[in-house]
Length: 216
Image 1 (cartoon, rainbow, N blue to C red):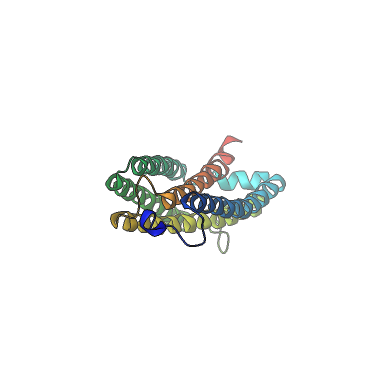
Image 2 (image 1 turned 90 degrees about the vertical axis):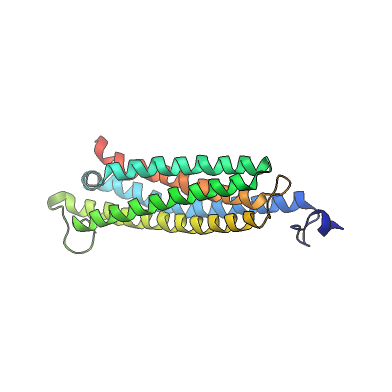
């Protein structure tokens, strides 16, 4: 009888409310581990900058500000669009959810395309920390360290965003199969939490990469 009422309900849960709470709590726990992961990287970044401020600032001034700013706007817009999709499925409009997910995927793809173009610019200007380096003099070592953090942080963020794009494709597939409705859309909420986290990480990285060096 339970399966007829809620075919999505798994056997280990007492009811759909229990399943929903467990799924959302599980995603929050996963995001907490991600915060610790990125937090350690950002803490190392800030400590290193404290000892190499001039070099970090010199390295930061070499970043492509317009790309970073455009990507910031793109990601914030994508989160807004996905939130609209969540609102649509809560109103029992799965078709609108699919459309919002498709737009979100498009915006995420634009972000990755711009990031790849930015990396191309960085490499062509000899800003990769290994090998010949653009900056010389007393600031070179600090600048190399800045660009080491830059490539690690932006690479990890791009990886997380790529995973998010794959999960969004899965949401679209399931929505087209009729898996979600106003009564059941917990996976859509869970994916929204992950996508918002990817957005927030870029909001934190943006000033550290593009603004701090230019403001000194």
